Length: 108
Image (tube, rainbow, N blue to C red; front, side):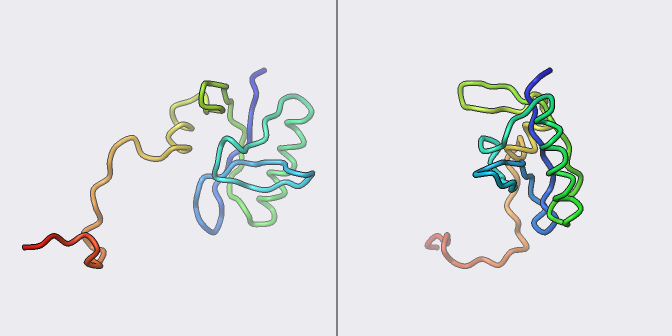
């Protein structure tokens, strides 16, 4: 069985989050490198903590994903989860509806 971590979306922010265990306390982080890995019985305790966070309205839809170790640390094993972890694969256009603050104006 591959190493796994738990991921979900933070309820208030809508951001991708990963379950981590630090000093005996469970919390959620947006940094996949800080996620707590597990397998077997320990993965079951991560599942219980993730489900409790969902009941407490901290996260939405937690689930386990497979991860692999590479030169940069932990990486999700599927392209879908890699995109969730790092963001869009293309450069997004600027939002023209936002007011210009003048910080990037060029002299005419």
